[in-house]
Length: 351
Image 1 (spheres, one colour):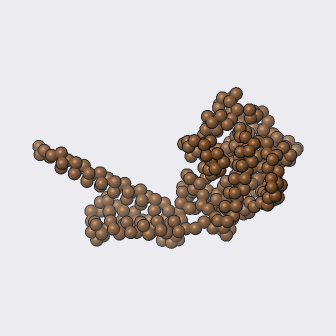
Image 2 (spheres, rainbow, N blue to C red; image 1 turned 45 degrees about the vertical axis):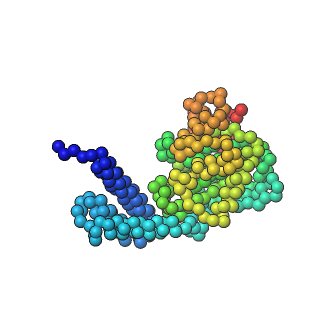
Image 3 (cartoon, one colour; image 1 turned 180 degrees about the vertical axis):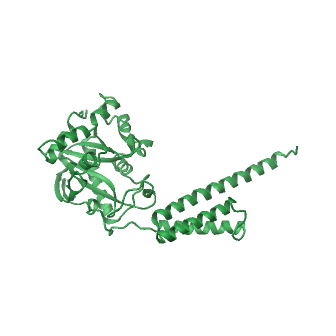
């Protein structure tokens, strides 16, 4: 058997690692680019698909899979690949979010406000009336809020795709009026459906919706039949007020410049975390449950933001609003305030 020295061994090992790293880079970059072309379709449906096929064949030839030859030479092909991929990055990151699309009516309006001291008048608060078949009567309204009369904050999680993934909403309670919910959502165009993969590839702009609970919570629990949970969160009065102001700042930002939604980094949970972090940078540690948003209530429980007199299992049972929301549909009183009262029935208070 031929024996090689340690120097030759390490050289061969280094070359093998470089080849492995190169292969991994080609595979990952090709998958990313093909998905970006599939989602964005910059050349139209047909030619974008042709481009995906051609790019895939080129990548396979570069790796020597199914093809033993090269377009020109291996070195030249690598240069072509790198230049082409750099151009694709330039194309992708030059795609700008926009404000002027033909929006779905649910997100057609943008939240704005006027403020005099602690008195805030919100414009374009959503208060749709939803019907059992998913249709709705469109209604946008103004609502005046006294920031000093915020009495509580609730985190609402709506599960639509298994226990790991939930949409996160934040509801503010007031001493003198019914609750108000903020929801960070994708800004869908008319006829557009949500895709978690598309959310990674600049498919959707961000939208901030301020809404009545009878609208945005009811539609999830009673119309879409998602599993919805309401958790009153312990937060000092000054921080509750500061968080509301952060939502106002978010509304300002989105009105001045459209921004992209991202399934991983800029979504309904991570942006709420960023706002709370801006209020108190030392308060919230980073945690995987900020990404696996379905476990956000467990994260809040570990932070002692939920009433500790109950176990997490008890919390999930008590916070589940669907049974009470279904009973609401059987009642004659259809007011917004009554809906908010009903879904809070039996939920422990903050201590």
